[in-house]
Length: 338
Image (tube, rainbow, N blue to C red; front, top):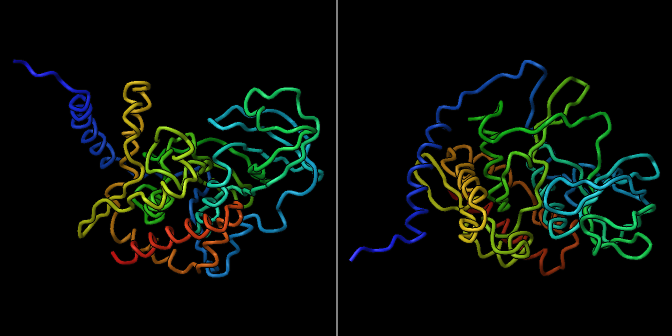
């Protein structure tokens, strides 16, 4: 009798063909030099032991204050967002939903390690004037009088302009210690949503330079890949603390579990997305052991208090702060045991 082909065999057949080809393309990727200004991804955090992870890269001085004025909705990404202006004419992007807490913590840990980030702040109660009668996304999260609970505000930097996005597979930093360290940071925080559109290039005027950063870190501190619901995929202590960190080691290289294969349901409901996420898995694989040791040593200089401050800034409960911080500390210790 002829056996039926199961969906799992189909998936494995697709993987067997596609992933080796992807790896070959990655191995052949050449470095290139940006001749339109200095391209920069990382800056040595010589003050890492004293960095304030409660306020983050913007410090206490840049935190949002007072009532905001609504400008327009922002329809990029999956979470509700809109732009506002404060009383000092500074523009901010307000994000609502499940990503606001994990992103607030993630940008602080990434900045602590020397990577460029946006200036993000968690605000438990935000008052916004001139709110429209109805938002196309997130209206159920807006209270009477334009009062909104639990939001993330991203400051629009003065003197810097977003000029585009950058690709994980093709950028000026491929093969460098700093780029590989960034790959480790994504795995450490379980950032599974590594689409190129979640990266940004900002142009700074003095001196002329292009700043490369990961601009959307909302899919962190949950599962290692896209799961059934956002509630367990992002900012979920149980998912994060029970997930696997390092999947394989050799004398030369280290593989991480993030990003992992998305939930199998997406193979049937959204095959293009399922397939594209399979092609992101290389970001956490085959990272030189020396570069893993380097970023581990850097993170090892953070104090327990600094790590907890990153999660306190997102106003997690005390139990969650301790749980997330403990898992981060355990992962840093794993890096430093290699």
